[in-house]
Image (cartoon, rainbow, N blue to C red):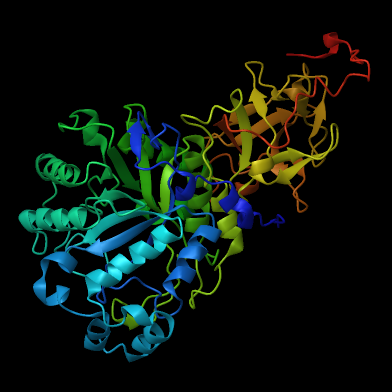
Length: 554
């Protein structure tokens, strides 16, 4: 087992939080930027308010400010806060107080919890309780995206729940426009409300491209006309898995620099493929499909917000574990904006079950602590931006990310073994046309020794032991040859030391897990904390070169 070090508690110091962000936000090609044109990466988490109670989950467990602070302490800078359409369009529901909503569902214990932890909201109307959560997040320097998740409050989603597409039983397009209008007006000018997601997971037998353009463009225009400062976030079809139609038919809107597209990606989006198939082959196939269906928008000059991803944080779901390692590699490679599902460790009431434990939840059942610190460590690797406008703090270089741990390749000494460490302390690497992995400065390269032995840095970079091919369908195996000609791959041992071992799971076999051998070369321009030019280190005190440049293969 790979030893995991926990660094996530330092992440808030490294993120672009709203306290330091010049709002409002806009878009610059594929990037989200602040008022000064500097990249702001959305590293969000989903917080549910769209179930039958229509109160943000967890308020019976912890004070709302404590929850807001927890979000920040875990390294997230943003919340995708869900809301049901009927909250603002159904008079019967809208007239209920928090107490009355819980009483109507027989949730007496939750009422006691809210009276103890959040007494100021217990007799507020539901919409005012929602506003109180927004205010708490803003006051604690968390940005907020208001997500119209569903119409009729309840768990989402199925093809036949009446909430899926325009014209469904609970999805009247005109009523939807009314709801968007009310929410956009209500939160116009509210600090830290930086975006509105128009509708979650369009789906069902009625879905079609023509109606998508008709109503989504209408909704976008309405929201922008009321609040021109916020980002307008558009979802696709088929449970937000498909935006491919945009490639053939561009949007026709009266405004620019405010549109963001959102997509979802879960392990179960591809059924049990991650268990039944070879992980390398599945990762390559699924990642290619994602790029065809939504990732292409980056090249078309739109930000892509993966507004839902996640997995079973108990760590026992093989399908989720394999998918997450692939997802994290892809998300880092493209430096995507995203929102993790989910914050809530439990629900007041979900699908008839009181107090249901949410195993995808980052917090535990009592909302007191982190459910799985190793999972949060993995996510930490994609919380900070790697590149983008205003982040050209140094020349472009590569980070070598190990997705299954969320750590990166670092070194402790000039020629000592390489190991995994915090990505905030990553080395700056380059990958050359000669297939060398060089430290920035061009002197030292990664070299294999023998199978099972640590990889090392060397000045001699012209032999086969210093050439690294990117192989397998996942494009995350780095392979080289040892002295006897055998092909080996970078790997990690139980002490987090970088070694080389026989390449595993390259194809066909679905019973093995290649995670320890998956490394992603990630482009970055952010300032590093440890990298320096090693050409300066191999000089004597008089500045004379101790090693002739002839030994250095470029």
